[in-house]
Length: 131
Image 1 (cartoon, one colour):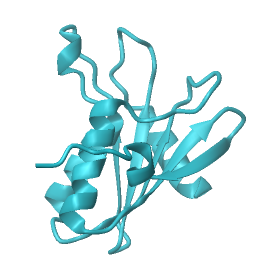
Image 2 (cartoon, rainbow, N blue to C red; image 1 turned 180 degrees about the vertical axis):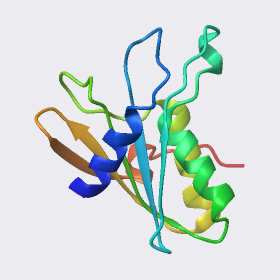
Image 3 (cartoon, rainbow, N blue to C red; image 1 turned 60 degrees about the vertical axis):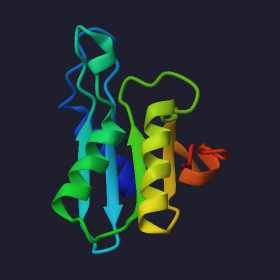
Image 4 (cartoon, rainbow, N blue to C red; image 1 turned 30 degrees about the vertical axis):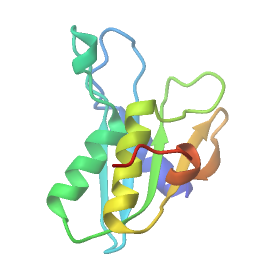
C-alpha cells in the first residue's frame, strides 16, 4: 500500500495547481498488474478543475477498458493535517466504476506523517446516485 501511495506522491509533482497550491496525485492499481497515475489540474474557472482521482480513473479506463480497478491511492506532499479524502464528484465517479465493473475497490487515503487510512469506494459514498 505504501508503494501505491509513493506512486501517487510522485504523480503529485506534476500537479498544475497555481490557485490552491495544493498538489494531489492518484495511483490506480488494476487487476492486470498495471498502475496508472494522475494529478490535479486546476483552471481559473474553478468548476473546470479536474481532480487527480478522476484523471487517473479516466486514463485507466481508456487505456485498459477490460481491466478492473482494485485499489486507488491518493496523496499530497502539501497535506498538513487530516485525511486526504476524495471530493464528492470523485466519489460519484468511483461509485460509477463500482457499478460498471461489479466489484468494489479499496481506497488508500494519505494522512500526515506518511500514514494512511483505508476505505472502499462504496463506504465513501454509501447512498450513491442510481437510475
